[in-house]
Image (cartoon, rainbow over all chains, first blue to last red; front, top):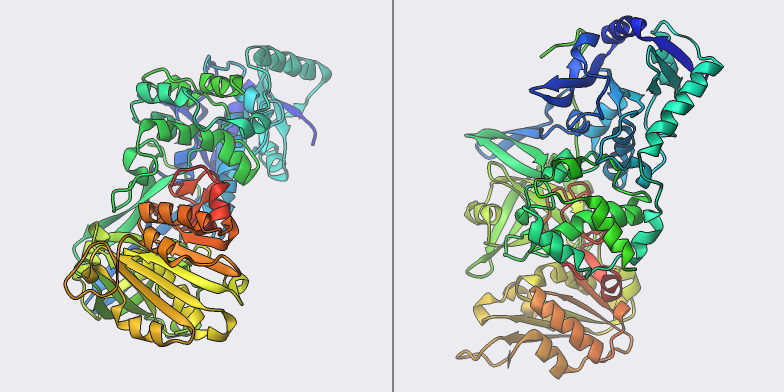
Length: 339
Length: 287
């Protein structure tokens, strides 16, 4: 598929064309925080000069709370019905490489065993992704340490790179070609290509080298003292999990309203004490030592063993948001240093 | 908030979290804190076609309260209904203890793996249960008794805190009178009128000295009982792949998605709940 360029002056009309065919979800500054929200116009978006949204795409595929079914009770009988699911053809505009790659991981989690998570995949099936190269990685970014998707995007239909007065446009799938066909573009020339390479080189210089955590995780020490230290700092606030694009754990709860009600699920995290507390009072991950170890081991070891891929895309949100400055990069370094 | 003009389709998708409706046909009071429920699916076709394997579990819904996992304690050889035993402990179990016969509940089943009974064929079987831990063993036990010729001798070691805490008493006679089957009962401390063994299950197993030769041990009970039973069986010469257990973990989805019942990279809800001691030793000690 041939790369193209789109002049920034033509971006607005591309957005208009996209908006008339799709619900477009893009980075928007909401109360001072960059989040993915539906937009109608280019002017609503914050697309340049940032290192990516503070929240991941998770809420657009598995909402923070989501009804699983409704029920109605009668005398000696009951009705149970699936919820109404609103489905629109959607385009995520300006997704970063980490967030797109994270979706592939969540796909694996929710389809690893039958039955698959149908609500997630219904939304997934109707969502197309126009990604944006990260030319201003944040201090907390380390995507290049855990994968090569910044250079070789995964889970996207189109990849854009900002070249100043225009975007370099790479359609990556058939759907991507369709989306790009809605824009007024021109073929990319050699000058564009060298500018792209230069832009990418500059960004990559600011990011760490690829590490082989997939290999190193085999030797992670279960009783490593780093978890004793983490347990002392961690507040179990869960911000790491709630901003993480690969975290996917949920709780299932009841919402009764007299003789009717619903069952819903909501985001949950292994960092909370009650996550694994049984009714009988037994808790296999009773202290923060076990719980912080679970998070790290799940991302870097169990995910590799179960799904054949790391459960971390290096977006750095857990680092940027942690109130007590826990840095997952340091934890991994510590685990691998004492091998 | 901006709204798109793009067409919205409203659909209703069947999803795997929706339970099937069932009616509680019979409530059996086992002990002061445990009841066994016999339920039948409302849908006649499902009632007919539903099948499961000994060791599998289910998620039971009490509408208005919530859902909790329970092992199927009935044997798939006895068709048309399912049974599960419930110790009153939390909100769902307490709600279950309040319900009457005829109440509609929700069931998602069968879930999880099961005892590899094909591999057990021709072998002597030692069922070692403690308290409510007898519930998952009962499914396999009755399955084996219904296929009696496929297995060697069957020994049942069953213990509880007191004689009043023993479940399934109404089946003891049936178990004992089956060919080549012996039932060994034990309680934690002396009681007036109790003429069976007194002592903890792991110690009783040591006293009974089961021979590991061509034998399989299947155990379930409180974590501490399992721990010492496994240790004692090892001492008696049982190899790790001759010993099987079924684990209890906090569960929600039951289908490997909600993320809470993992031991290392295995999920108890889909890769378990049944594990051999050999398989358990491969996993981190976090259960």
